[in-house]
Each structure stands twice: as structure tokens, then as C-alpha cells.
Image (cartoon, rainbow, N blue to C red):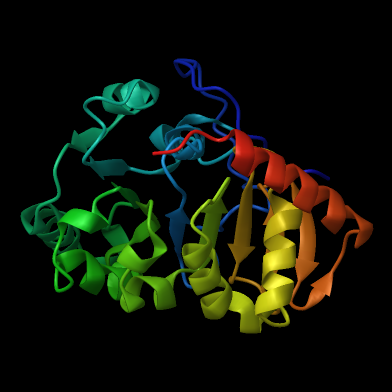
Length: 266
């Protein structure tokens, strides 16, 4: 069965369906130690805000208003991003990162007995370029489950902006497209290639996952061997085993080249 699809952002239905069962293709927030750290790496104008909005508001994803007791979003662009307007209406939002925000979340969670801690979600969108390496978020990335943070989403336009602590603790990694910076892709192939049969095979998997603009590769490290998906919809690899016809790679390469040619330059 195909997984949930990302759709255009719209005002959420006030009558909630409250789907308690997450599709298996999504980062799982109840198993695997009780939470997920989802690292989202995607260049500008590749649908990152739409994806985050779907993850939090679409009832085929997390429907965060129903699933979590509190959701906090920290984003340097949220005040001016029209795609994020429904997030501003639904959740606590901050338009600039500050360690005190993370401290406040942690201290509030610590004020409860462990079994009574609210289940919360935290999103940091495009903040990494403006914060110090020793910022609180790096400490939180290794300890978020201790504070009952069920879903921690950290997004960046640049993979090399992500600290080793964040990269090593990510249970799920999403790579958007098109990705014109080949050095960035090469860095990710170097980082994750060993999980999927080597750097060359990782690049093949990325091309298979992203034949069209706004597609993304979802790497799921909550499974062993790790899994790779086209968006959240189709499983395409488990470890080094590619599960779709290899002839699709040439078609993916052709489509990828067309996307790179047609994509606007920054």
C-alpha cells in the first residue's frame, strides 16, 4: 500500500479525523525508543515549507493538533512565508532562534513527573545557519526523548550546516530535489553511502527517489537495514538492495537533468 502523499497547503478542516495509526512509511514517533528526529535537507524553493505543513496539519501524516499536546515551531522565515500561514494559526511560533526557547521547553517538561510529561513536537526550520555550534539544539538532538519530544524536525538548505550531533542522531533523513549543489550531494553520499551499498549506489537511489521537482528521498534509519523511499509513498531500497527495476535509474537521471536545467538559479 502506498504511503501518504504531500498535497497543496490549505486551511485544516476544523473537524479532525484523529487518525491514531501512522503509516509505516512515516517516521514513527511511538516506537523506536519513543520518538523521531527528522532531518530535512532541501534547497530553497523545493517544497520544504509545504512538506512541513503536511507533516503537521495533514491528517494522513501527524495531525499535530490532535496527536501532540504542544507543537513549537522556530523558523527564521515563518513570518514572511505564505505557505506557513496555517502553521502560524495553529501552533506556537517564533521567528528567530534563541537558546532560551529550547531551555523553556526543556524546563517545562522537566517540571512534570516522567509519566505525566506532555507529548510534544518541536520544529526548527532554516535556523542552523544563524546559531552557534554549541547551541542548545545540539544537546537536545541527543536527548530529545528524555523530555518526551515525540517528533523533532530540523530543516536546513545546506547539509554542511548540520552539526555532527544532529546528523548522527537523526532517525530519519529527507533530501529534497532538485539539488543543484553537487558538492552537497557528494557529502551526503559520503555520509550515508555505507548504509546503502556505497556512495555510487546512494546517488542512484537518490535519482530513483527524485524523478520530478519537489520529490524527495526519505531515508529511514528506524529499520535495520535502513530503508529508502520515494517521498513517503514507495519503498525503493532496503540497505544495498534496490527494490525497483534498475532501468528506472536512466529515466530518473533524464528527469533529474531536465529539472536541473529548468530550475531557477539563486
